[in-house]
Length: 260
Image 1: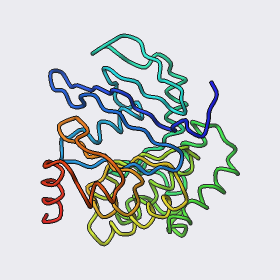
Image 2: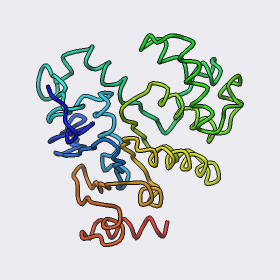
Image 3: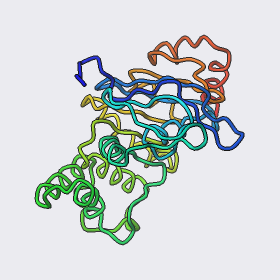
Image 4: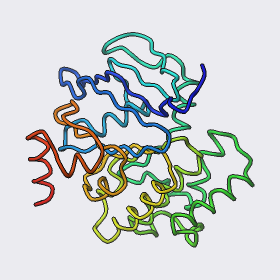
């Protein structure tokens, strides 16, 4: 397989996902080229977070293709029994797609530095000295370099989320997936995290972001996808999606978020 500049880092084609009889994703196509910041917006239950979890193979989808750098996930079974066929491929893809969750998911019994170092050491088997150097640098980058030796419970929510971002970066991934990274935070702490995400966007990092924050989506996205009931209702550059929405559903959604 030959990679070209036009090969997307992430490509989702015709994705379908159901929980029993409930269809959550009904045929969605999304792609992110190198350096793209793609924001997924929409009401609760529209399928945004599910798409991210399917992309990272935390959830099995029933239909459709997921490609990473042009390499398609291989499947066994079909429909409700479909699952990835190659565990090594799953590990390789997950290693290259760091996910930052709404709840920070830090190990409470480890210091912040240990949290950031754990996956590169155990999953990637990288040398400890190199990993520690990188971990300290990324904690500096997100503004909590002085918190290396404290435990998660001693940090604010905003600091914990920044530690989670440093943990994702320390894997040296090709793309970052953010699932509502600021929704568990109060407005003041939210701004700390948004500042970090904006700086990552300015560096040209490839990101898929599920967010309720329309201002952040407008500021940092190269492409915005509006989901409604498991389908893409409208998508495009942020100035078009936010400045000149075409569909009534999107207009209604933006109106409700502005007045929320």
